Length: 111
Length: 114
Image (cartoon, rainbow over all chains, first blue to last red; front, side):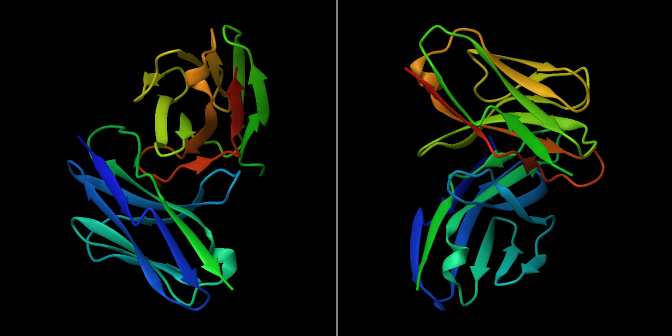
């Protein structure tokens, strides 16, 4: 069974304090790993797709990396507007399998 | 482009009432999905439609039915609402197979069943 585990559940950072969020996964052949950002009361917003180990993607203060067992979302010098829940999801190679989501990491960045 | 739109935004039902949640996308996507999101449970797939004319069960389909009305619209129906169906419901869509696999989400419907 495909599974996604995110850690920590919650993270509180001071503005400018860099850190990383973890997404560990088990999947029967990875088609893609996805990162989303979700603000309170809103739908998830797509950030990145990673397809193979060693791949990296960047957007502003966020960088996502991928290994064969986990992905990291690195946040460099975060600002209060980066506060949100970050969701990780995987899709297996076989057929038209839906995404399997982790429970998310709730990030708070304090000014 | 409005992306993925959902109606209504909020709804309160009494136990046993029925309702239909509407979803539409204007991105010409083939696949559409219905999720529910509950505290501590994450996003769970209820039903999905890989293409117009097809629907499949997801992880938590009991108590729900879906209709893929056309390529743009995918509705979710609760025939007899129960308090356990109190949740936030998200619709999502994805481009056709063979291209990008990421899903794009709507703003959600917050449903309370009393």
